[in-house]
Length: 354
Ligand code: SAM
Ligand code: FES
Image (cartoon, rainbow, N blue to C red; front, side, top):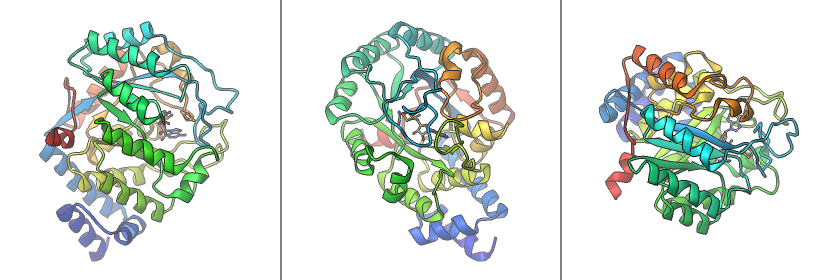
């Protein structure tokens, strides 16, 4: 690392922001030494806000049906080899019940864009979970919907919504998605989610085909401006039955680097060490935390369906029971000097503006 990169890192730490050109420079020239310095500063920053607490969210993968055809995704419509399933309300409630016993206070309902989940169906499920567990937060990750739908789901009790922007570059967006999907609609959804009063998560895959240091710099500029409550970033991992089957996996180094940069940009943001990161490296999630992440999202889906929610090849934790997943993560986190907490883990940004 030369003096120039060191200066950029110090500027990012002090001012929480860089220009697009400076991000490009840091991304292109950041070597191992720069990554180490960034991780050190980012984990210090994270500790100054969250101490050594790591928040957990119990992920319930409610459906592998999807009407969309994102080119990167293993459960895309055109993957005729994908095994499709949909959980019933009762199955979802029992996952949440088990999660509650294990100490989870946030449940994330994630799925493909499955037309079965009308507003009525989803609202019924959300309100029942909130009735069963009034002290818990419900997060949705169910894709693009109308403003009216987001409002109805919020009124039914949903607290948060995760919708990765995927890339802040319109041309890049169009190379990752089929024609019928649009960058403008993705951005509309994100804006409306915020306006509806959700705690909102955006994010992107690291190393998606066509990503460049310029598109990444635009992602960082977008994140800084949008100021999400949560930011989900994890490596792109190819799935054998998608058009991107032959593409390269995103790297551990770049993912850790970007986690650190985002922590320095938004010290209070909720930043998950993702399952995808744990998939590309045996200690990926621990390294993610040491680079500034402060959230983990173990799987609470019924063991019987886990393999079917296959977004990418070799996804980890598909053979485990929920309790095993939680215990395994707890152990891993202890070894690096952090602790899993029983807490809703609301966004500090959101609470400040309430
Ligand atoms: N349908 C919802 C949506 O589009 O937001 C939620 C489910 S979608 C599968 C959740 C996220 O998985 C996507 O936003 C994408 O970033 C990530 N994902 C999909 N395919 C992936 C892959 N091959 N490698 C890594 N992440 C992937
Ligand atoms: Fe719909 Fe991936 S294409 S969830």
